Image (cartoon, rainbow, N blue to C red; front, side):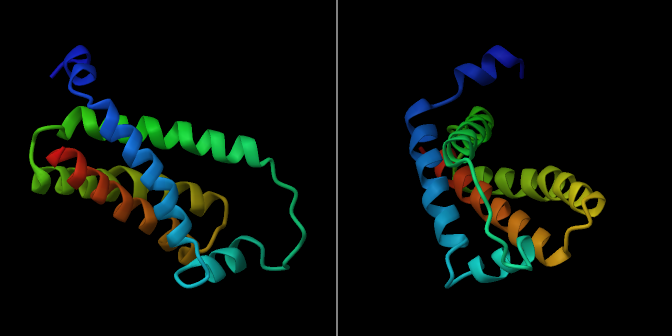
Length: 135
């Protein structure tokens, strides 16, 4: 498949919907009831006051998630839910997890933090693939 065919295969409305979903899913995943407490502890063990640039963080994340979801859509649109799910799972396990793992090893970050962060993308991209494959 060539690039122009992939771009033409993207279904933009589902991409927008799933990008919005990615924020809701991320908020749920990082809530205190799921992994939020562990995630905060692993990222800030001394509980220091951190200054963040919220517009950059949320805007940048929205753009990056939009690109990732559009890429999944380009490949799985119209291919069915099972194929979409498996593609999202495959991409997560074969590309996302190893890339994050290498970065986390060099940054001396914990395996617990890697499991939380990569785990979110494994679930998120699998769900996105499922929905985009059907839609």
